[in-house]
Image (tube, rainbow, N blue to C red; front, top):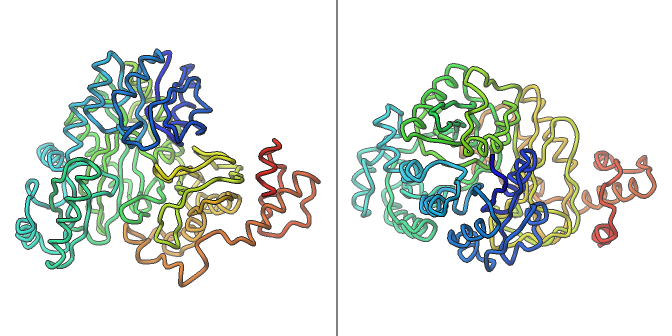
Length: 504
């Protein structure tokens, strides 16, 4: 086993990996930009190494600086987290070329699955169903028009490289093609350095369902069930759950078999995710493979009981998978809400700032993976994800009830804006509760101007803060308003600096 691992990331995923290292008795090394000098992952790590200025292009995306930091710190391996260089084959080669272990798949497997067009061809050869589309990349608007006519509108124009919802446009009319081509090529070039694109038939009422796979160096490959990721805005996920309300036991078995087949087709090693689009008739099609740990991995951990990040480290160290397919079962239901520093009232635009005070929920079935703290600054240089709130229950109904309770307990104040109230709206929505939704649900149903405000109501926050203050200093909570019932427990924030933040 490794003695020291460097984490080439930041935020909540860096903290998550640090915790896994600690449980395994491994020293964790953090890297940080100038903007992250006081970040939580830096505070939590055993060692921390600066890697450059605030912009990611000058720090977290500089492979040579990260490799040098690992060598200087005496690390034997690098964990990439997700995002930044996590799916960059050149980075993998730089890591292994320096005599270090990359905690993830090989550069070869990453390259095969990182190019969506080539991955589609590979999956077709392996007998994996793919969405109908162009046979390869396209170069002109006229080519897009010709294939769109063959496939039938609507269609999706997608970047051949990258992911995360970037470089993707829905085309419903032919007069939208030229602008879609311009935008996709421009966005793909800016985001991934690769402006190529291809076309796919648009699946009506699509459900975004992904299957977690894991493989070791000996070729043992398993799946750990599915996650539903259809609650999105502009192709960016907001909430996930496991299992999926759509998937039947027969469909789960079939999707799992195909996901394992897809991983074996590229001799995959480590944690990965096979993403599918499913229609209302439960037909499903391969979309892409993510060759890394996913943001939403906690819901799989909650329903299977396996620690995926620790398993990543163990497999990278040469150990066999600690579980066989027949030992894996989904127990209960888990839901994850992504807490972002963004303003739902303004189209989910990023809204970073300083956190004056924060109180995370507690209690049965609640998990909070967090990358920030009270008094800290949320930078505008990086993704605005603050934390992930996960609730587990014996069934979906209990998981939703626990998530509602947890969201009501959550308090975060400061100069930033969060999407907490969006998640409260979601957990109360009749269609969501019934499991009747698809990837267009948020666009179709979320109109904050027609209903309650999406932001936290100042009066509600004031009541919660007053109740928490009263409980902390007097132990009395009888006079607290009903909406503050979850804040009656004594607060753990006791230092003078944090109390001063609360007063402000």
